[in-house]
Image (tube, rainbow, N blue to C red; front, side):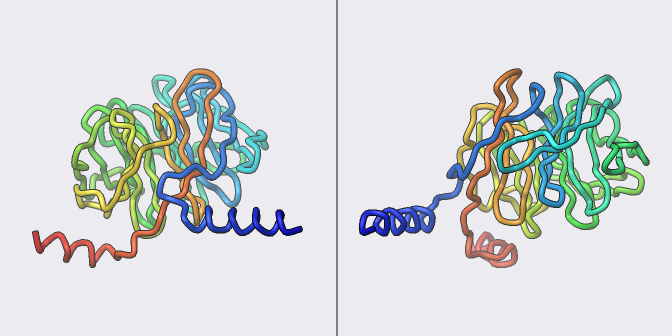
Amino acid sequence: MRYSLICLVAMAVSLALADPGDVVSVIPAPGGNPDGLTWVDGSLYITSDSDFMIYEIDPDDGTVLDFFIGYGDDDVLTGLTYDGTDLWSCSNQFIYKRSLPDGTVLDSIPAPNPTCNEGLAWDGSSIWSTNWNDDMVYELDPSNGDILSFFFPSGSDGATGLAWDGTYLWVSMQGSVLIYRMIPGDPTPVSFFLAPCDTPQDLAWDGEYLWVTEYVASGAMVYQIEPGEIGLSPATWGSIKTEF
């Protein structure tokens, strides 16, 4: 009993001292070259560049719960996000709005760049998109695809994934193997840490933890990671920056 109590205390201390980027759990990804990732009502939705499917998986163990064909233009299937009602998927030239659970395309808007569009995120009113070619992060009008704003994250190198946690945008950088926490529109990251894999792709936010999938052809994994505490609001961060 004493040993068990010591173990429990040690585990509690370990969790309390978790650092940003620490891996909480790992599950297998279906298909190959998983590209897009998003959180939908307790499930993860994930794409595969190998078979062009969109899978719903159990975040506890990676079990496939459902799937449907997610073809886009030029057979490219990249980022995913969820607007609270519908799923959005990305391809080279278009971003598709899809119904759930069947994935039927309801509408589409033009992507901000005709090639290499990657991650998607929904902030409650706008769609955000990353692009591998120009390393930009774009804010888009979901009704027509108009570019509302854009910015180039400092040190950006192979921008891939995106997620929105209600306050910050998270951006994964495959080239530098980093994950940034960012204020939308501000090129300077609030914080960053090393990704748990060599090829970080898209990101998802489950309300408490960040998820990232690795882009490999076989044996790909999805990592649940600790985001860490900041202790600064975007407004406070902005005021601090003006002092330098």
